[in-house]
Length: 212
Image (tube, rainbow, N blue to C red; front, side):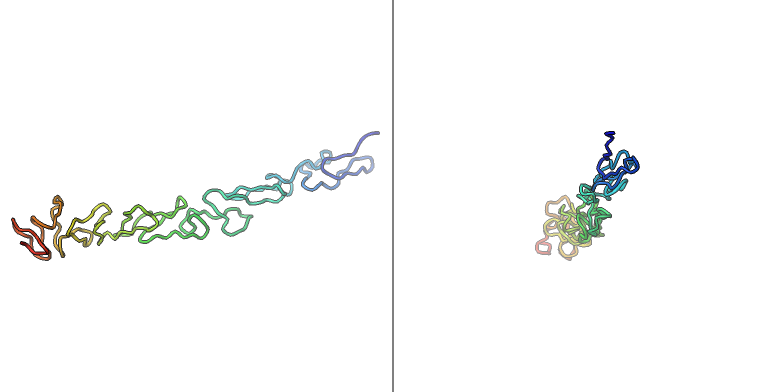
């Protein structure tokens, strides 16, 4: 007498004097296999998501199972869900040159080998005879070192007044040899080659390409 048949989160019946487990209530499961404890396990957790021992774990992402289904949350830093499919999580690294900072964002920079190790397109190295001299990665290796008078041969070498940059070296006038770098203006006097002619002699200056 007074033995109540009442099982947690389930329908129950009393057959032949025994309390029998029926159907589990929505959102619960009989995960320990024991009728006496009823449907003891909620099935809206990450370890029991929609059923007993069904783990909700998605790659490179936060996930939730509050509704009983495994739902994709925010992607981990440096990853994205590029195929739009929740079941494989955030499957793409956004730190590669083909997906740089976002899905399908290609990292390509002029005259350079690129890198995207931080999620930002940057110069890894410059192609031969080019330099990244302005400190701005977005325009790649912008300086042609063979001809750029502001960056002749290297980013730190600027030709002086009257010089031109040819084959990565500063020259005087038209095809003249390089002059004494100690001179403030190394193409207007001293033993510098004048224009396309010979070097001026002592006491002469080079004016408009001629020794005077």
